[in-house]
Length: 167
Image (tube, rainbow, N blue to C red):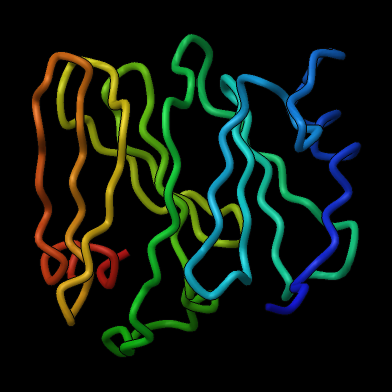
């Protein structure tokens, strides 16, 4: 095992607006944490705020994302994005290598690039989206979304990646 990064949890705690009640990790008892598969990106979420950290960014350069009021983040997960080329067009910003997915209380599934650029926002159900699971079956990972009423939504990996390539 190797150390990949030292995270300043004090800065993360301040950006998330945490009170003095902290868990053993030092972030907050009601905070969520997601680490990308390659350990190059980490996300912290609490209520309507997310903080993104990347090994590819200069030290001390966290990205703060705020979602709309009363739409608290319920779950987070990283998804790798295939590096396939887009259709030829005008110069475009660099392609994201990773996508942070967040399930929200409104039932919305939101996604941002590792740089904090909004990529997607889709309402799948009216119940809170409480869990995200990526299932790898050799190709692009399938996405399962669990809602508080027990509803389950499934996106095939190939369709999800096609959707992301068009963005």
